[in-house]
Every structure is written in structure tokens, then in C-alpha cells.
Image 1 (cartoon, rainbow, N blue to C red):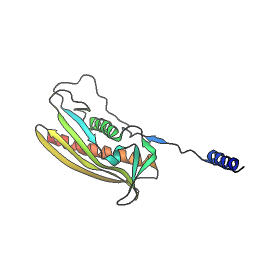
Image 2: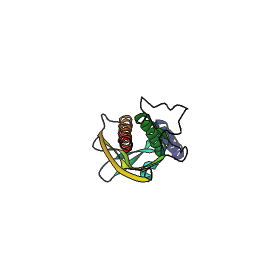
Image 3: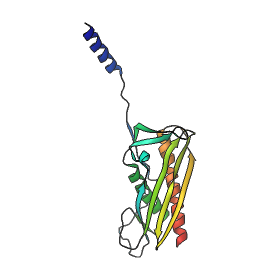
Length: 188
């Protein structure tokens, strides 16, 4: 009798439990993505975006939210659709291509004569005060010289929710790409 009541109670609780949907997010590439033609010239300046690296806490699947000055929460049901470092590299290539139409920007090297860009992202999360953080540093190898510059953007998130957080993070990443593009333009 007791066994039957326990089993019945377990079935009732199991039937009443709700499932939590998992949501996947992808950084938007921008509405005016550059189109790279198939006829690239050998004299066209090239930038190879070799790597975008992220720290371990950002390298997992879950979106990160900073709940205090020292505490971070990694979402378990709001996940990146593909690895964050790959998304950041792909959108950086797209955003730089759009900002630098006279250059070939690629995630793979093409030949020996190119600039090489590496980016180390140290912050890419929403924050408890309604802002998002996009921070890190980039290193450019240009004609035998190394150029290193940091970036630290803190942008207001216009509304609550993960959708708005991802869109604002993408905006911050786009602004970072614009800063890199401006520096590249000033080198030539």
C-alpha cells in the first residue's frame, strides 16, 4: 500500500513538472555584410584574422552574466549556437570586410604577404547594472611591426532579456571591429 502511494506520488510529481526550453543564440553578422568577389588580386592588401581567443569561463556553451563585481553565472538553458570564439572570429571577418572594402579579410591565410591579427577577448558578458562588457586586446603584425591595443567597451542594454544582451554584445563587437579597422587605415 505504501509502495503504491509513493509510486503514485512520484508519477504525479513527474507529470506536473515542466520542461525548460533551451534557447540557442548566434551573433548577428550585421545587415550590410560585405560580399567578397572571387577575383581577388595578388596586390590587394590582406589581413588574416588568425585567432580570436576567449577565457575558459566564456569558452563554454552558456551565455555569461555578471551578477556582482566578483560573481559570474553561466546560463544552462541559454546557449551559444556555435562556439563563441568561432562566432567572434567569423563576425570580425565580416565586420572588417565591411569597414575595409579595399582589403581582403580572411579567417585563413592566403599567400605569404599579409597582416596577421590576433584578438584576446577577456570580457563578453551581460552585467547586473543593465550593461554589457566587451573587453580584451588585439595584436596586429604589420610589415614586421607588432601593434597591440586594448579595448574596453561598456554599453547600455536597451531592454531586459538574453535577446537584447546578445544584440548589445554584437554591437560592442562591431564597434571593436571598427576601432581595429580605423587603426589599419591609419597604417597605410
